[in-house]
Length: 509
Image (cartoon, rainbow, N blue to C red; front, side, top):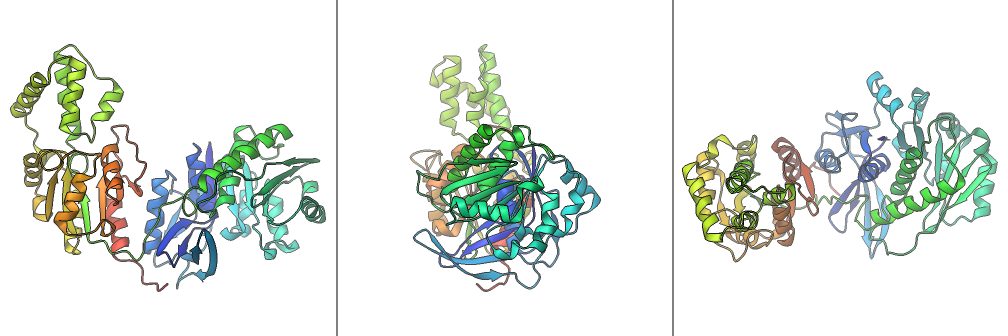
């Protein structure tokens, strides 16, 4: 199922909190689609300022494809300035910077991909109305959010948009059923063959098509943490449900009973999204001072974990035993203690016996860390050092192994402190002790540091230490990345993000 958000991107900036969240209708819709299992993309333009780099990192972390997105050199990102007090938002203004990046002109290759998508999600904020005609003949459904402003409810604006879309959405809080029907009748939406969704805050949404009217259920239950982007989450989920049931351009969206069920599912998804701050999380503290970055070792600076996993597999095979895939996945990022206990469990041998075998194996065939250094690690550490950022390595490995790895890879000259969860702490990861020790040795507080991790245990340890965790995504292991602030596929991406954090765009808020 291919879903594409087409249009704007912004940051919702809470000035009194010093926190900003990525968003914008098209971005929010694409993220919701990705979270609901669709193949999601964002089509728009991103500035090359620090805000744009953070937006890219946030969308990559949500598995949103950016191949339809253009980067505009010298551009500036739109910031929606607000304050938030006791859960309520207060609008202050919009800052477009000196060179705000509008929606780009669509080229032939982009148009071809858009026309083949199952769902296209756009809005009045995206400024795409002049190009909607280029999408005529699209195969899936084209949804368009008209928002709540009267300037987008004129005959001229409707004339630009309505001939090209399948589903129109209007936000009409504090409007009763009769007023909604009068509005639809006045503009003859149904007669034009367009399905209409009307959202009304926490009141029941209404869906109209042909001669049918379907009533959803009011939003009840959990108290929302932040309602930013709730409407985008609702319509993305609804459009995806309708498409999965077979709705395509030129067809009817289904029976009233099925649409009622889809409205309920969309409401549940929107409620889940409202339990996170911002449109979909990923807070950006643009005023923060990053004084230190702490790195895990195995899997982050050196690709040694496959070596250790293979040694354990070989030892189990010598006893005629084999690990399950779940057991293999649990080895990544774990301590020696966990690995030896697992080997005891699988082989049925005593702890002393398996430890002796394991140590003999490592002694006879020691890993050469210089051959498994991860690409880009040295460049990143050098960059951080050159920008006055302190660097530590905090690992569950033996202290001697950490130092040997840093010496063999040449990374030792960039590292200010080392901490071993095995030799120096009461417990290894996911216990946060090793990260707290690293913070202490660097002389920095948790809010002045970032952690780079790749494993479930490591992420849990970093979160427990109250430090923001950046996850380096690896192809092996079944990693639970819950708790990581952002995810990256390479050190090149991490360097781009850290450069944006260390050198934010000069815009006074």
